[in-house]
Image (cartoon, rainbow, N blue to C red; front, side):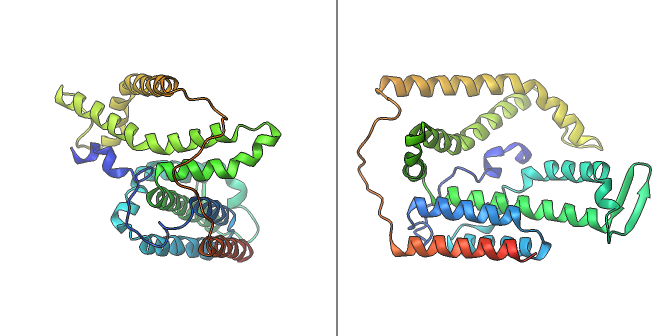
Length: 278
């Protein structure tokens, strides 16, 4: 039953107030720093640079006083996806296996395993792990209201070019907000089917295959639930007189301070070092 408690495995979109220095940063500074660190983790070309980004992210999680087990819980659901990517790399990356300086370690039919392919797979695993932890760090230290307010402030200058900055900020904030809700609804659907005697592959050799086949019929009610929730949200916004793009006043004003500028400068320095490290 614990395998189907999806909400416990989701750490994106859940705010954990701990009063840490990262929590006290301006949301705009956290969003900009997050984007810089994501760029660094994506563009870092070497394994040592990616490991450095991973350890830096773990250090920031410790500073934010986020439980380590809670932060790592978001990586487990992504493991099957990462394994599938690794398998596809083994099949469709022959140019990597036969590149200059690469040594073939094992070959059978269309599969060629070289040290270069293993390096590529290791980079993918480290990068995805870092990106998941960075996303969990941002959403755990920034409330939904702060996230939307910060994104809106950053995107408002784009209104001059016809880009709906306020609407985009609202979409992003609602996306993070409903990730835990969708996980809870999926958990309810699975447990309801288990109560009716559904077989989700609790044991056996082909456990993963049976579970995937049992999950397919749940896609229709899950998407219907998502559409119903979106319709309810739209009706609630319309009933409250929501009009996108209108200038609004706020109960709390954002204040950009020296520590916010230092956080952005440090993130920029880390991004440059990570990219140049390879």
